[in-house]
Structure formats: structure tokens, C-alpha cells
Length: 219
Image (cartoon, rainbow, N blue to C red; front, side):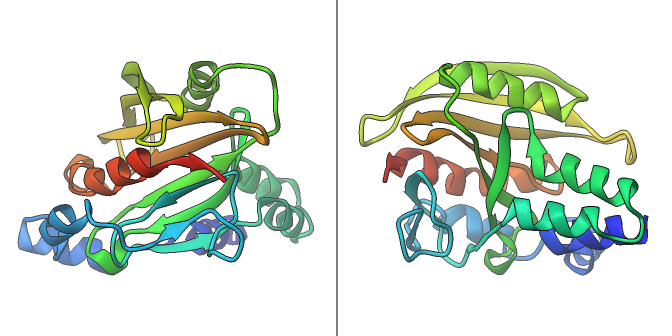
């Protein structure tokens, strides 16, 4: 179990100290408002060869958000070889795979003052549409409610589907808002997911999510 927690900390990016500071002040984490106001401005592009995360798509990320590639297969292999065996492997599988897609990149908002990630998930071609992929992704998260699906088109003409929903943590007994979108590429489906510490943090990071959606294009 210790190894499982360490894996989550490694891949998820523990932000406990920032969280505690935010709660102590009775407000969102320091800088969240600044992140919200600056997120519509591009801080760079990821997805193409040579960038932090090489993906089937490319898009703009907000200033000071830090992207890191996730080698899911490598992490799953390491977890399965651990002393906790099946327990650690099962935990890693649940964290790195969701529905038809596997985590490929996470973009950390902490350098910009918010607590949360914009994560990118990719999958193999499966002959289905974006909304079907997105529904499978959301169902796999479990404990979700009030899903609102809709279609969208990026600035470059790429069509996709997106969803807003509520997620309730069994452990914390708290409910928060989350957002995700999916597009289909020749290399398979791609899902972008925005979580956050809580609904307030999620909403502070939405401009970064909208920036990614607006600039999304096939590589």
C-alpha cells in the first residue's frame, strides 16, 4: 500500500502544503486568480515532436503550467514488479488507465498558482466517435453525476465532444466539478481532462482548459 501511495504522489503531484496554506487563509490557493486571468494567453505549445509531451494532437498551454510526459506502460511494469505485487499493480492500473484510454501527459498548474492538472489520455484506434469515447471515460471514473455532454469545434476545425460533470470522492465524501473533452485522430482517440482540488480551483483553471480546446489540432 505504501508503494501505491508513492506512485500516486509521483504521478499525481502532491500539493498538500499549498492546499493547507489555501485552507488556512480561507481562500483559493495563492495565485489562483492570477492564473485565471492569464490563462487565455499561450505559454507555449505541446504535442509535436520535440516538445515535453509528444502526442497525436498539439495545443497551447497556459503560462507557467508545466507539462510532463507519462510513460504509462513503464510505470505499470514497475508497479507489477513491486513487493506488493497485485495490490500495487491494480492501483497503478486504475490510476493510469481510464476506459479506452491511457494517461500520456500531465500538465501541472501549481507553478501558475493553482492546484490541479490538465491530463492527456490517448488510446488505440477503435472505429468509434468522440462522444462514445468520452462516455466510456466518464463511466470508468465512477461516482459521477449530472453529466452534460455537447459537441464543439476547435479553432482549426477539429470536431469533438466535451462534458462537464460532478465527481464525488468516496474517501473524502466531497463533490467537485470536472471537465473533459475527446477528439478522434488517425492514431486513435485523445481525451483532455481537467480536475482540480475542488470546484473553486477547477473554475480558476478553466481558462487554461478553454485555451487548450480552442487551439487543439491534429499533429
